[in-house]
Amino acid sequence: MSEVVITVRGEHETRIAPEEGVVRLSVRTEGPDRGEVVERMSSLAAPLRDDLETRKDSGVVTEWSSQHVSVWANRPWNSEGKQLALVQYASVEITATFADFASLSWWVSDVAERDGIQVDGVEWRLTPATAKRIEAEVASQAVKVAVERATAYAGAVGLASISPLEIADVGLLDHRDSAGGPPEMMRMAKASFAMDAGGAAPSVQLEPEDIVVTAGVEARFVAR
Image 1 (cartoon, rainbow, N blue to C red):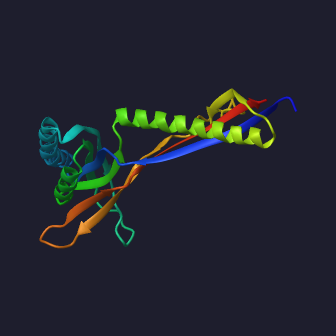
Image 2 (image 1 turned 180 degrees about the vertical axis):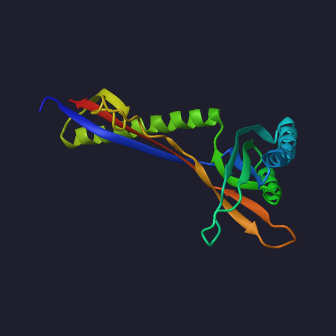
C-alpha cells in the first residue's frame, strides 16, 4: 500500500460568558387621533433617549439606537363581529447595548413598568474583538481534531505520515458550487427572565447563559 487518501471532519466547541447584553424594546401608543397618538409616542420615547445617552456617557451603555418608527391605522372588530371606529397606532423601536449586566437588569425593571413600553427581548453576545479571537481559536482547534483523526486512520492501516490536500468549512469540500455558505460559528445566548414577586414593584433578574461557539471543518489528507 503506497498511499491512501483520507477525508475526515473535525469539530470543536467552547463556551464563554457573554460580555454585552442587547435589550430591544418598543414604545407603542394608540388612540382615535393620529396627531395625538404620534405626539404621545414621542413624549414617552424622549425620556428613554435622554436616559440612554446619559448612560452612554458614563460607559454603562456602549451604544444605542432609535429606529423603525411606524404609524398606521386599523378598524378593529368587537366580539359580535361589528367593525369599530378607526384606531390610530404609532410605535418606535429602541435598542441599547449594556456592558454592565446589573445596570441592565435594573433598567429593564424600570422601563417595563412605564406606560406604553414593551420589552421585546434581550440577547447576550461577545464584543467584536473577543468574538473574532474566540472564533479563530475554535476553528484552529477543529483543524487539529481533523489532523488527529486522519493520523489515527493512517496509523490503523499501517501508514506513518499524512499530508494535507484540502481543508474547508463543513459542506464546502465536495460542494463547491453549492449556494449555501458555511454554518454560523456563534450562537447568541438567550436571556432568562426571573420576576421577583416580593416588594412593591417587581424586578427583572436577567440570567445570561454562556455563549456557545462551534466550528466544523472537512479535510482531505494523503497518507503514506
